[in-house]
Image 1 (tube, rainbow, N blue to C red):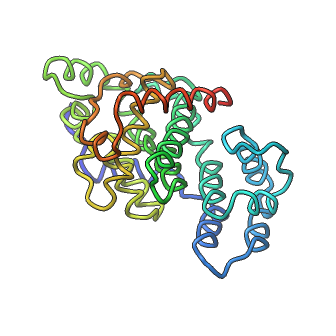
Image 2: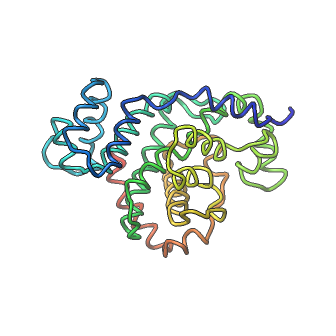
Length: 277
C-alpha cells in the first residue's frame, strides 16, 4: 500500500469535529484574569448536555470531594479555573473518543477509558514531581491518542502489515506506522491539537508522547505523558493491538527523577483512582 500523503492526512484531520463554541469560549475565559465564575456559568448554561457531563466528571472520585457538587458555579469555586478547563475539554472529546477503533483493536469505550486513565496518571505524576501545571498534564494525557481517530480506517487496511513490520524490523509500533502508513498516530494527533488551536506545549506532548527525546518546548510535560501512558499500559487499561509494542525511554524516567520503586508507588495510588472508571 502506498504511503499516505500529507494532504490525505490533513483531510482526515479535517474530518475530526472542531471543538464546540462553548468549549472554546470556556477555554478563553479561563485564560483571562478578568473573567469571573459567573462568566463561566453563563457560557456553560447555554449547553445543558455539556453542563451535565462537566458535573459528572467533577463528581468523579478523582477529585476527591466528600460532598456532591451540584452546580457549575460550585464546581468552578471548588476546583478552580484550570481544572474546570480540563474537565470541559474532557467532556467535549468524550463522544468522539468513545467509539470502537477496529484498526487498533479497541472496543467501544476502550480508547476513552485508556485516555482518562492516562490523564489521571499524568496529573498524579505531575504532582509527585512538582510539575507546575498538573491540569495541563491531565489534558495532555487525555488527548495523547487523539490521532488514532483519524488513522483508524487506514490502520484497518494495513494493521497486519504494521504488526509484521514491528516483528521483522524490531521496531516500535509508531515506527512501523511511519514505515507502512507514512505517518504515526502521535504526529497526526499533534495536527489535530494544532487544528483545535491548543497551546504549543500541549501539541508537542501529544506529538512526541512516544518519542520524548524530541521534545523542545516542555520536556517535562512530554516525559510525564510518556510515562503515564506506559504505566496505564502495564496496568492493562485500554490495551489495543499496539499496547505492548512501545519502548520506555530511560531518559524520561531520569527527567522526572523516577525509579522502579516510585513507579510501583504511583501504580498503587492509581489503582484506587481507576476503580471509579
